[in-house]
Image (cartoon, rainbow, N blue to C red; front, side, top):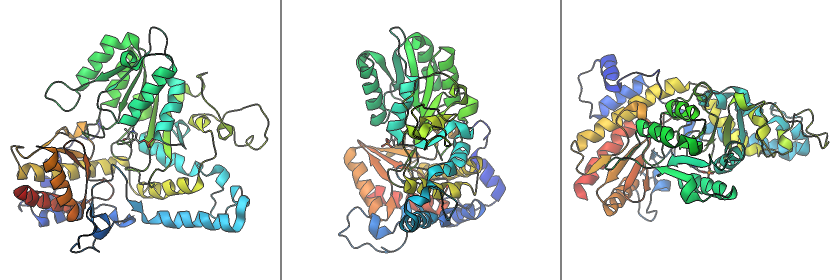
Length: 457
Ligand SMILES: *Cc1c(COP(=O)(O)O)cnc(C)c1O
């Protein structure tokens, strides 16, 4: 992946810092935080007594900030978001329908999503005309598949990974049935080798070569939600295209996490949600990438009035004249409050770049990994199932425990200490130091608490 990022995090950090202190110390974490500051001041951090699993227990330091490692599930709220939403509520209260065209903050609702396209495109490595902000993730997957899953009697299969997020599988299953095929035959679910947790790129490519003649669509996640593996999107796309397959990605866990170059990698389409690493708020609006090479093609697409050129939108004539690019996929006028919530978060991203964030993130996750291996170097008590190589992972580390019971005990123990992680059945805890707001001190605290808990369970 991020082929332009070639640093061994510890070598770089240690040589840059030239310090002798033990890395497993609060002081070392502080030095790293001073050297590589986060943007956490831009966010509201949840309080310990609000995040604890067992609310009835009195929690020491209940009013202090929790350590939040769940940005892979729901990103934190940027401080600016409330202000932007309140502004829209006021415009609505005071101007009513007029807000569509005349807006005191220069955000007329009729063109509201124009404000979130450019920064979104930067984050996914696309041209502005290749990105639309609309609907939500699974819906966008379906709308994209209407265009890009065009099975024929010979070439009708979908290649995916066996452990994909269930919603993706349900989408594929229903699309396959919709076209009259049997999911058991038409969906190829690639599994890791025996004894391995993640897929090897070479095995994915081999499968594409072997069965490509029958594969209509290759669709992987960018970063796997369970293991944290970052797929080699560039190589997968290339292999798919060599066999004449359409290649799409679900970027739910990749966007705002790793460097993406959708345009240069020649990806056909991609979908993402904005409430994970993009911090736009629970259930908020989704994103869609359609490569520019498809913009002028005659691919079928489902349409609605919001996909028409803005100058014609209110003519109410019945000739549909679509806007150029991905925005032609818009059906409905978007929820303004949803869009400005995304705008709030993107304004934080604007203070940095994905490359800068990713470099800090590699170091941050590398630091956490080093602390964890120091607790349990033989991986007897837990195993990190996320790939070791930073090129093959994003910020998340997935820790697999020896049993489901032990995992739950550890999960609850962390939670009572105000450390927010999430558990995924049967036996995994996911820890995601988010590039924007997690600190090296957060990682140190996590490792310290985990070490203590492992001695007691
Ligand atoms: C989070 C996530 C989803 C969620 O889908 P919605 O349609 O936004 O509810 C889907 N797929 C993957 C891979 C995810 O990680």
